[in-house]
Image (cartoon, rainbow, N blue to C red; front, side, top):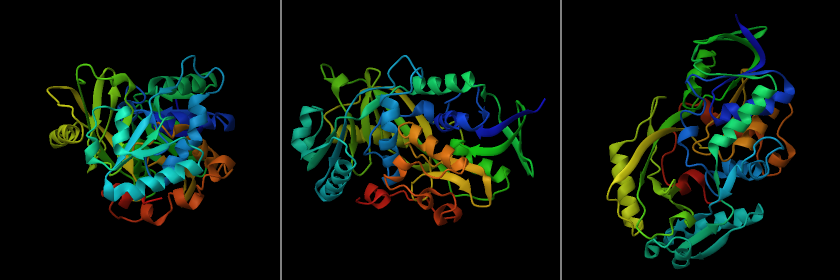
Length: 394
């Protein structure tokens, strides 16, 4: 028997689950996930931190707007804290100091707590750094680890309590549009709804094509990560999440190990991504070049998908030819940390209420995030360059 909901959300990662939660006050909701469990792909392989300085301009502002939800979730959402203290450290070489200064100025303007310092002073936060490789550093004390599992469970409990459906093993096989709305055929049956939300992560392009919208330039890239044992006697649990400004690597404590990624971006078909051996070698080289750590043996290696528009900014809102097809895509690794605000934004646009005032106050406009902006409609390459080239110096 076909099931009907006001909103059909395709994708059961953090994007789909969070936007479904935000749509609950506006109608009935059904979330369709192709895997046997929610959060299987990018969400379950996230570095899971909340930093207001990570990612391009608009995504970082959505993190600012998400902070309040993660630190003080609605009553009854969870019995556990969604975030715990971590801190973040950003390292700049001499030619990057202007970029780091600009990031510092922007964060101060947004009300964030940050400290700018000579690179040598960063050793008090992470003693294994080769500080002589850098000129300046910035410390963000309010960066938090995010309990992704509890966040996902909190959303799903609220969805089900409100009568919404979260359907797994529901791979979409066809999408049809008529005057009454959408019909979505899946391996779990047929679903009907008035509004379709495309939150399918690496599969968003395939969903758009099935819906008859043609090509949209929101595509997946592989990201590799590994873990290894920390040096004996290290102050591991107190280390911050550490990034270089050029985005060539990051590392953090992870379940008693050290996790490092070379921040690779290799174009990929949507898939169950695996670690790339060349990128594994690069991760090891970078951690041994820029810290005093040595990687004797890897504990684990994995891959995940990160989906980007060409400008790396959010793709949120109605597709121009069809106001009943809503995008929540292009997270590029920012999905968990910006989840609450991006979902609230997508839901507000889906019901025709525009951008919420607090998000608009951060400088986010409909044109800047629209699926109809030129770079999303055009068949142009996603930028894979320096952080400054991608994010700019502001």
